[in-house]
Amino acid sequence: MAQAQKTAGTTAQQPPSKGYKQELNRVLTFKDLLIYGMIFMVPIAPMSVYGIVSKESFGMVPLVYLVGIIAMVFTALSYSRMSREFPVAGSVYSYVQRGLNPHIGFLSGWMILVDYILAPALLYAFSGLWLHSLAPSIPTFVWVLAFIAINTIVNAIGIQMAARANFILLGIELIALLVFIGYALKFVFADGMGAGGFSLTPLFQSEHVNIGFIATATSIAVLSFLGFDGISTLSEETKNPTRTVGKATVAALIILGLIFMAETYMAALIHPAYKNLDPDMGFFDIAREAGGSFLYYMLIIVNVLASGIANALAAQSAISRILYSMSRDKLLPGSSFFGKIHPKYKTPFNATLFVGVLSIIAANFLSIETIIKFVNFGALTSFMLLNITVFVYFYIKKKMRSFKDSIKYLMLPLVGFAIIAYVWSGFDKMTFLAGFSWLLIGIIVGAVKSKGYKVVPEALKDM
Image 1 (tube, one colour):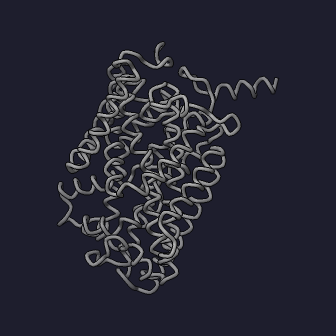
Image 2 (image 1 turned 90 degrees about the horizontal axis):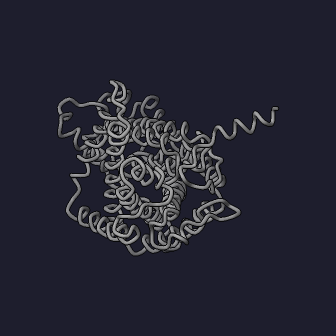
Image 3 (image 1 turned 180 degrees about the vertical axis):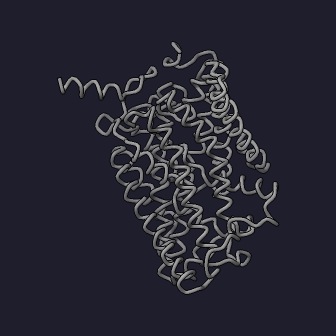
């Protein structure tokens, strides 16, 4: 009887197949997803851009990240709604495919593909440059190759190993952050240096806060929060994903946003004179001011680990799942290769290896500026499609139009769409050129694979 109850409970936690055979290893919990999301967004991410953001925001960097939490929570809620309805791998590709239209879904997957597939290369390039500056005798290429090898092996061997690595790496980042805050508290409150105590200046300056400031802050902050959406790529490796994926997505966004605010607020108290900060090394210079060379070099090294290992590990994991998801629908060139699961490790092994090889090429032959343009355009275009999908699927197709439902499925996703669309509209001409060129390639690939957009994947034919 006990065994029967145990079996029934296990079965009840499994989501509907949605037309697919369960191939991936379903072992992840809410804690694993939350850690993954936090690693993907990087708790110490503001350190690398603090100098630039500080000047753009008149020293109100904590306020910028508060704006970011508010701006992105609408899209996070859209991910939450769709993850409960469609607990399958593929993230925005699967959600738009099922909730809006199979062919538009392919294009949304194609756009998020360029974001995720180049994100690891961007992280490897940054990390390699930072380490090369500390050890000039070792070429950047060697560092990049080492990071890629480590992450590819960890991701290929299994999601449980990746989860354990994420836990350790997150711990390292949070410990480093606590050390910085400890030095900051001593410097400001015990030694009376910097601002000499609490100050509202980093949080609000009435003479500078207006519509223009909010618009600028939104543009900065939205791009700083990219990565929270990666949690949804692990739906088919999660226990009870209909409950945990959405909660972890929203929780990771809010927790990381609050951490961003705390660390940048303490940095502002240490060094209130934001105008003389170095754009690239501003936060690290502040750390040296409060804690000397030890804190300066420690934070640089931990940032390298956070980007080159932790963040890139999460990004590589996400893109391999999207490649797998699109390939099992036979929508990509080489689908038979990318759609295979390793019989022992239960991971998209071939897709993971491919991302590793592609990262080597991109990190060494594409400029960082070019990669950033593709990443930003792909991510925000997909976010807009996701918000529209929530509105169409729940409000139009399912006719969920009570007062409460109208807020959830009409107002909130459309606000999310408007915020992302505003930031998207501010891209420069080269970003639009790069983004629409990739989209055009996707339209051609989609037309060929779907025989002129007439054929839909087998898993969707009964929907």
